[in-house]
Image 1 (cartoon, one colour):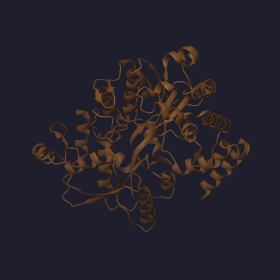
Image 2: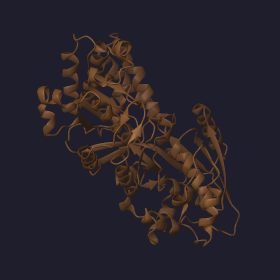
Image 3: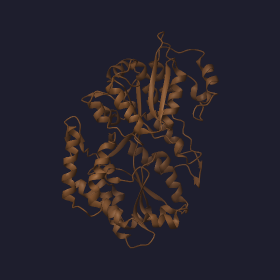
Image 4: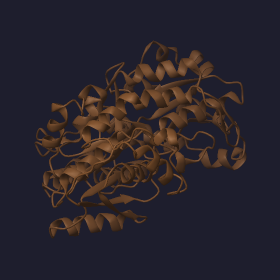
Length: 464
């Protein structure tokens, strides 16, 4: 943490000696129901540029990272910050689109994958973002920005044509859980390592095996994984759209397997029946062979492992692997930001984004409350600190939320060392895939027909 604050200090002009006292007084007020403690504000720095400047920020409402980092930036900088938060994301999309075309708009856009409906890649292609390379190189020259402190694949997810337009702020990974006795009995091959194909085959077999069992299901998709076809494609290191070459790169065989799984799952789906009978039962996870969760990983793993423990079950934890490669994993960027090309204060806007990127997140594990959740920081030092928290802190919720056992911590640490690819999801492409593939799931069309239509639709989309 100390090292992170030193780097922040290098980004600002110089340290104000009396800042600690000032910040402690300021922190007594509340913003969004959370205040900074003395420990959290100690040693912060301030930009004391003699030239008055201000920035305007657009962001989605009720994102903890955005709200808390904005508050911190106000404390450490003399830049006037104006924030417009949007409850209706479609309104934010409309404002961004119309204002950018007319030469206006805010200085900073903050996006969350939870509700972002814009094609960020096309925005980059169309020149909507300010290139950040000059600021990054300036920081590198005095050691303020050190590439090794971040996941290179995540930084690269914000690049286009060799230039950095987006700064990733957080990421997440999809998790799968299964009763260890189930795996030991039916799928011991998963214990020796697995790629996405092998995990997918286990999901399909378990859907068939449990098809005729009442109140029991082969797989359950929860959180942000309710339509897994697109998710699995994106997270299997097989990108379907090549923006730089403006080409569609569908893998037909993989697409067929994904759609077959989803169709089989839909035919075997007894989730409403199970929820109707066991919905208030804290051990409901035991009614699903595999349970997938796409919510914030640290919180989800800790919560789910604790919930299995109610029934004295030890679960195996699987992370979303590459399609055809073991020990290679994919992450998706959950929160990210960029600077409007029309900004009159790009340097101040960049300083703000770097503050968010290195924000020392304050995890609250006392309640199982999604509004308090952070995704995984892209800063490795801060991420390591967060991992230590989940291994030591208890929580209170509908049941006893326990510290995450050492074996799971070690597994997560191993996975984090082998994240090879990261993506910014494309909600437009996801909507096209869902619309075009639905007739296959309902039995109205064959796979080949759906696939040809999908390929053509995506080609038209890329040409727009």
